[in-house]
Length: 197
Length: 197
Image (cartoon, rainbow over all chains, first blue to last red; front, side):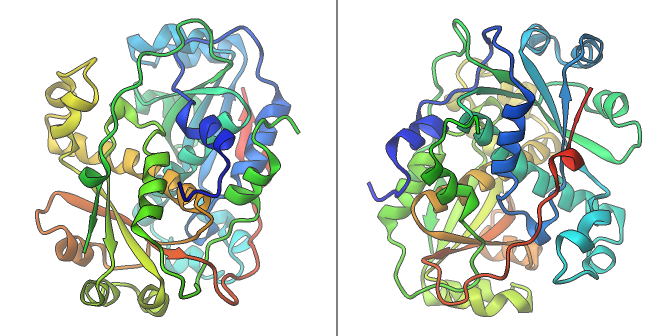
């Protein structure tokens, strides 16, 4: 094994961590979410564009507004999770770009002046950040339950009425409860995924 | 600090790791890439679809075929890196799905029978896996230099003549060399990214 990351960290983030469908009642605090963000914010995005935006759905009223747009199989667990985060791409991320990537302040107009180019870049880079965020939740000793089964247009309208954001995932977060996950699925073998030329 | 992940691992993966633009001559071995894959393969994708495919560009001839499709500013470092990986989404991932997600073998046809639905899902989930892969490279004690500046159509035709894959990123990999990175850019503050409802 050539990895430098120690085995306990490998287990916490990858080998023993699992997608959870049931949680204990233990709350997820604002401090925990801040610590997750202050870790994963350092992972890279193209031109340091950081298009991910996060809505923490905490109030019962907001939870209800979200649950009704989830696919039926996701409703009960989304209603019951200690914390639910809506993760979205900000399709107007270029407004922050001159401050975030001062080496090439013209990127805002030259690369991202047109909305379709912005949406494509925001979608890909925010998806990278969704991956970082899921691992960050695990780094906090919490379990994540990422879901993509919902009415995306309805979630966008409900939580991002500015029309400038695209939901990418909804993530339940908490300590895993009883029967939190099914048996782990198989994984593709190295030779099915990696080729050398 | 509420994180369970130990500070050395936080530094290795997030806080001290940086996008590298220059590398030493030290080779990246097949065993190292296998160990990276055997770690990051466990991170989640929707319906366990695992659409990421990786081409390791090792031969001088293949390297030349890749370099000529990179944007000019990326050519020299892509030509010089110890290893270059082309990361792509497999838009026909559904063929493996009945074996990879046996709980719902009909998903292959019901959810992913149409190519546009497959492409959207493959693009998002493979992007998650690109994020996991970048962190996996760092877990190996190596630096990653992910790039999205290339002629994507030309890379697809050159390395995926079946027409069923979409390149998402090209990643230089190795030990960081002299002046490997520029000053770290700023990051958006918690309150600019996270809202609570």
